[in-house]
Image (cartoon, helix red, strand yellow):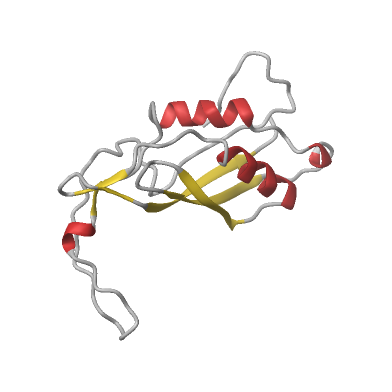
Length: 150
């Protein structure tokens, strides 16, 4: 998917955000499956703790893409390189919707990784995930961000 924004130079950063965690229809209920105990250190999850709704960015997927496109810049040290690919940022969306605990799950280049973390940490609060009964819960998600020269 390409983002065409007025005023973006030919050396543009194009974003593609897609993952199993970020579906266009994020409000579709999830069907809970019981947790199994594999060892004495595992936690048994009650079905009520499974999310009914995944966390979502305020305004939806398109607004999140706009937020990232407006803030991400191509790293200066990579201007003359052919580095392209995807950085996956693992985030925790807290019960309050605050994005915390950002870390790189899949690295592309240290400069791209740093730019991705910096921008994701600026995100506004999300709408938190909820359980079947509507109780907000903290959830970990992956945000893939594609760096590509146009």
